[in-house]
Length: 236
Image (tube, rainbow, N blue to C red; front, side, top):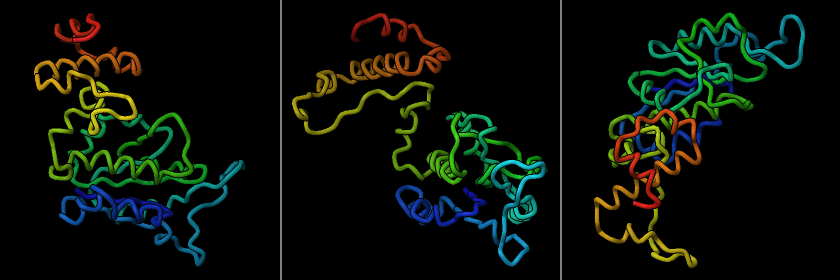
């Protein structure tokens, strides 16, 4: 899978593209991340990529021509504008985007971009209802999330199905050694060796946690008869 990142600050990505799963996946040929500096597509000697807005107002606006030229150079694929005005990014979008061979991400800056280039993108995506200094952090979040669904990137593929949001449930609690950590022990059920009992406990805790922390997600769940029984019990 290939990601093309259009940005005014490619140096922000230097550690990200070399580290952890992303770096290893590139070494194995599973991912390719091309960082494109928008200033390389400017035409003046100062490599200016922004200008003052028509009509006045604070801040600067990203020039349209460098963006359009960079998009044309990126080639085929899904073209995404990272913008506070975009649709919220969630796990359904992660799954959908993982089916594209090439994704181009434009990292916005300043007060935004010339409105006339907006139609050159296939969609707009937002990380949430807050404002970032630029789209670089959002681009890294999207690359990280989508890359996890590329076959071979995550070593244990089974873990993907149990992570938070994969089934619109928050993940159940996890524990590891030692058995007692500063006076706090591991739930007895996890030490029992009873796999069916452990499965029911994990489902129960995931349901309860989602109900308490994310009622919006819980309301969208299609509960099974077993789920309802678990929720009615103090502990399975």
